[in-house]
Length: 397
Ligand SMILES: Cc1ncc(COP(=O)(O)O)c(C=O)c1O
Image 1 (cartoon, helix red, strand yellow):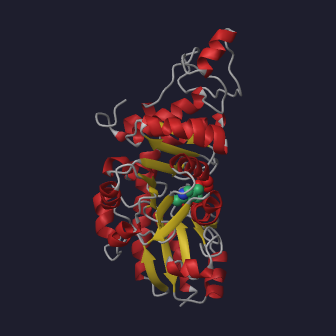
Image 2 (cartoon, protein in one colour):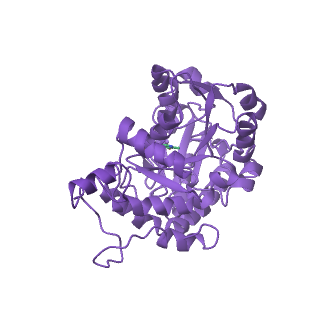
Image 3 (cartoon, helix red, strand yellow):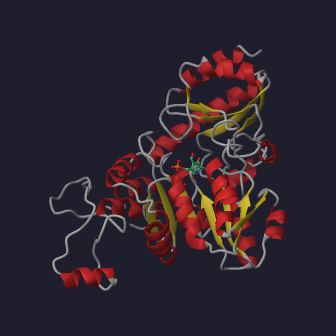
């Protein structure tokens, strides 16, 4: 497969297919922890890297190879490592790119657990992070030092949907020091909407729990980069540091979910645009955060680097937190739950749920207010989703 010559739909279905002895159309689930060697010599040769072949499922498994090749293709990457979760992907990538004494420059708005890893976890091991508003490119430039080895960002950011100009940030980082790894969490977009490596990033991470699997029944992640970095992620980040290996069954479910990624993301985006326009016109709404709206600050950058605007948005309501909570509790179709990218429309309160790892001051600095509600717009009929929100919001006016 070649990410330049074949269309996305063809690649999401066919890329990475592994031949199997039975000729099964769908790659089987290789539910095995270890692999037989024909001889002691063969086992030794595989450990020494002198012979290709599987050894032990923490180091590789054909069910995982299939989805790794697929994701590498869809993100236009040389190589990919599958992980047990999105946080597994993020931590394996960060451990592989840093050592004690290094500095990370990171966006000030990130998924709560990524923020916790960078602000509380990694400093325990001598890696410090400077958090900067990545909409301010001069601030990014000023934060870089000779100790910086990683520049880390999400776009659109979770949960304020702030859009970061990937090409501009990558240029600033690489002009300063070409060795800096620019790592982009592409979870909100999925590979269908954006491919950060083609914009100058060095590493892409995904929570495959979200759009990539798309059915709310898997926790999984991926790291994509050049072959040298992915080898480091597999042989150090995963093998020695985190052990965060994906299960063969989850790899099978992901390969299944991926076959419809483009169709799902198109529908998520269409529904989200309709809901965003409705919410923008509702008197109970203070502000809608959706990159597809012309009124949204990052709209022009989003148009430049996103194929469409995705299914994620946040909304600020005018009512008190208690009144908002009561109205959301009574919604019928939208489900109160964290996670995103599923068929079901999900709503959550970042300040007390996904971003409760931030202190009140940190929440304020990142623009995550008490009144902010995050919405993962599902695949239901748009009219039904809008009717559900209208019933809830009408109670607030
Ligand atoms: C943007 C983003 N990155 C990473 C993660 C972590 O993924 P996982 O829950 O699969 O570990 C999440 C989870 O919500 C997320 O929203």
